[in-house]
Length: 179
View 1 (cartoon, rainbow, N blue to C red):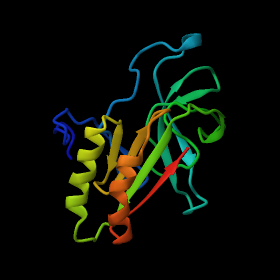
View 2 (view 1 turned 180 degrees about the horizontal axis):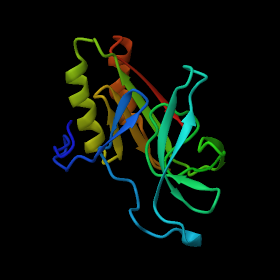
View 3 (view 1 turned 180 degrees about the vertical axis):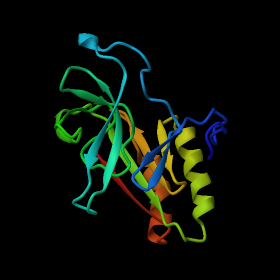
């Protein structure tokens, strides 16, 4: 999806933001814009999660809202960072890397990775996109093969996870739920 185009739901697509060697495509806007947070701090602030335990030098950038001088609320849906979900509150170190999670929001993240060279990839993309739109769940796609879905507190993901079982058994995708 190119900037300025429309997402599958017909909504205007958001800007592309580089993440390492990939592009992060925002299909939803979960940011509060220019709203003033407690303490007078304003809106959007980008931090990074260190993923070098998986690949040297690898990081995921996370959009946040600064709450206090040293606390940030996550306002995006992480694709690769474990243990951090939408609206969790984190602290950062002097390099703007996540240092700790200080408050869990109760949200969970359903992550799906389509196998890039699988013959059914495009059909699965459309099927899964339709399922999350039908369920009215906030979600983001990365490179058309990674899907991150917000599961707010109390959300039952059974209908979605049921749709994932057969494709996973066929080797067409991998999925997990993180909290």
